Amino acid sequence: MKGWRALFYKEILRFWKVSFQTIAAPVLSAVLYLLIFGHVLEDRVQVYDQLKYTSFLLPGLIMMSLLQNAFANSSSSMVQSKIMGNLVFILLSPLGHWSWFSAYVLSAMVRGLAVGSGVLLVTLYFVPLSFVYPLWIVVFALLGAAMLATLGLIAGLWAEKFDQMAAFQNFVIMPMTFLSGVFYSIHSLPPFWQTLSHMNPFFYMIDGFRYGFFGVSDVSPWLSFGLVLGALTAIASLALYLLKTGYKIRG
Image 1: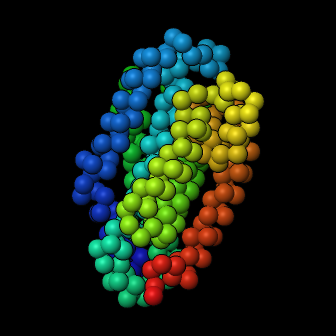
Image 2: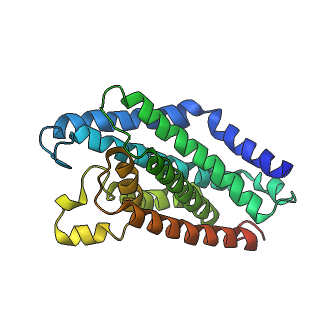
């Protein structure tokens, strides 16, 4: 347990020492998204009857920021350790694959949740929000952070340089995030794109998270919960298997 705590503490310090870049910068980016899209589309887009567009947009931006930063933390940490060569010191320790998994994923979740909370606190003064089902908000925030932290760990194990990690983020994570209903309700899409959106697990994370604020969503929150939990179980099993076998980290 001491070894696990030491690795977890190290990962927390890694992003906290540059918190202006890892926490403050993503919060500022989300605020700019809100100001720009809210100003342009406030009077042009109607969602969920009388709900203001900026109110609809904010939960999506919170979750998007949370997901992207949880992924970035675990993936960049693993790749950086590989490139700088300090991964060998962790390999020499008696830590098992569960300890690795827990330390990397939980620390990435902390960063993702910190950024999401920062976005909420900074924008709450400007955007009216209700908290109809706060438990759903917490559940989907935790599931989303865990899922993207685990995906980041898998990407970090696979990538051997920063270019590969950036490709994974730019061509997989970012499109799935932006096409998940952050900026719109999928009911406004043509049938083909609605069907495609229902195949995106990120959609269920954001839709369930938004349900916690307003009590309305595009699909049932229980369906979203089941699908997200199933996806998390699958990718967590894969990540644990890769760590156990030493995929690309042991010769």
